[in-house]
Length: 170
Image 1 (cartoon, one colour):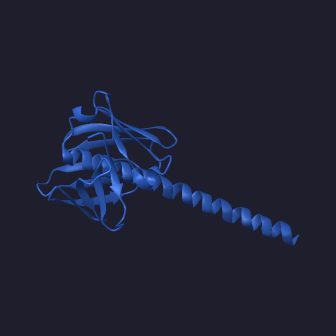
Image 2 (tube, rainbow, N blue to C red):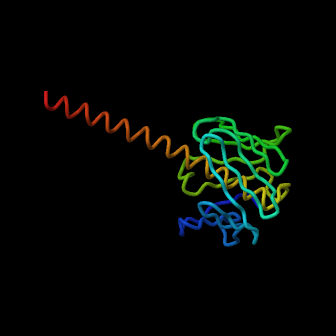
Image 3 (cartoon, one colour):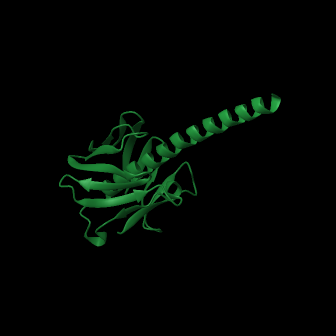
């Protein structure tokens, strides 16, 4: 597998695809996921991170503020990774030995498609569950960054409009 992507045709049931599909790795809803027939409980706290707990109680967790931290720690049932913001919307995933594992970007519709691109293609040493968790974390990061920048842009436009109205009235 070279990358994962998301099918957003049903916004309430997002499908994680192997490359562009049609093979589906899993389906995600707001509080749960079905990965290869295994039920996951999903929990998200923007300030503390997110976690996915499998039916056999394995935990995949990302720690940190998903809105602003530039370095986030990931534990995939004991395997450690770091997600690092290299610049603006470009992110990389390193393993514990600082080996480059994957990358994703919010540029060029990245938030809509959120492709998680693996650096070693077929030689990747990650399970389907680990790939699904990393893909979900990448999506959460990009979605939350977009919300943050959208709020800032709207506030700026409201302020600029108010200044324009005041200037027009004077």
